[in-house]
Length: 67
Image 1 (tube, rainbow, N blue to C red):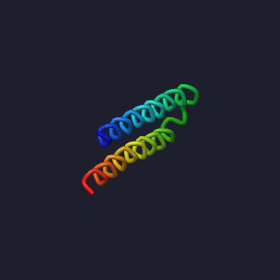
Image 2: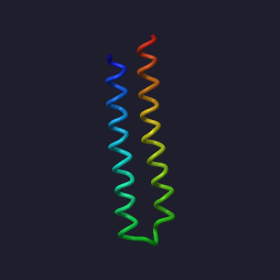
Image 3: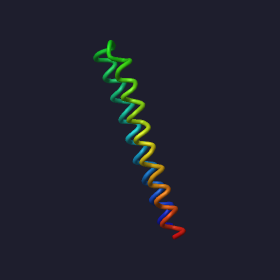
Image 4: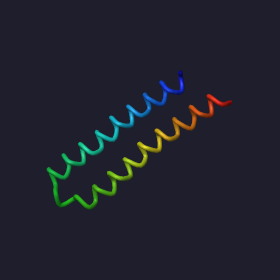
């Protein structure tokens, strides 16, 4: 039960974080289109770090469940 709740909240948090990242990227490119290439790399780094937090939470939940 707790694993499912923790995993669901972690996934919801990641969804909010990823939506925020991409929303701010669209806003930034709309303001300064000449920085698009530079911002794209930063965007994908933020996306990867946000997803990594979800996977770490999943692994920690599975370890807590089985140990």
